[in-house]
Image 1 (cartoon, rainbow, N blue to C red):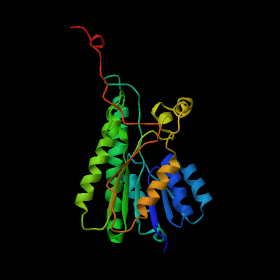
Image 2 (image 1 turned 60 degrees about the vertical axis):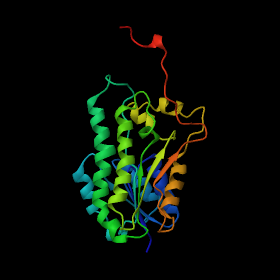
Image 3 (image 1 turned 30 degrees about the vertical axis):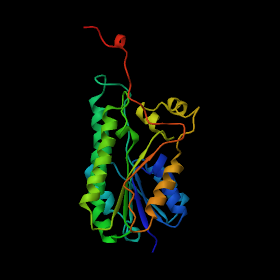
Image 4 (image 1 turned 90 degrees about the vertical axis):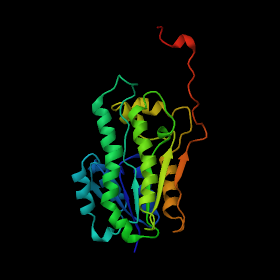
Length: 256
């Protein structure tokens, strides 16, 4: 029986690339996301291999219904790729939109929590060889202006992954926090409310990580020997290095 991966945010970027990687290499794929037309494209590309389910990460009822709707021939799930997430807004505090903050928390934090809880019984039934890969970000470790709540949600992913690994000790489930840096996706377009020109400018004069690089990494993690767990992977393209703390000059501080 073919192993099965459940992917959140499968309609673009890392999720879509990972769906194709696993489908091409002998796994069945449950692809979830809000854009039905993109799920249909994946299903058409890989008939009977990819099964698309509409799911909204900000709605616990939608997550519960999606997991309940998994067909019997796509069970049990062997790998959960918690990829769905987003960044909204580019401004520093206090020039922010609280509604955007709420959406990021509901998607990046609560969505990941509820998806994990719904699929955990199935992963436990697989036991040895089952795996969870949570997409964090270097933004959870390296602060930058405008990162505020987005970075905080990714710091949550890092720590939740570590705590979940402790709580599931003895089940055989492997759990990894995958934390990419500068990577090509629709990230900036989503963050800026649909500015795809700004999105392309982000990658015009550098060589970012590509969605396929992330897919290769998830594939490697899911196919490691059953006794091997990788706790954290921090990935950056060669053109990026960890940021140094910013040092302000005296004349850059407001006067008393």
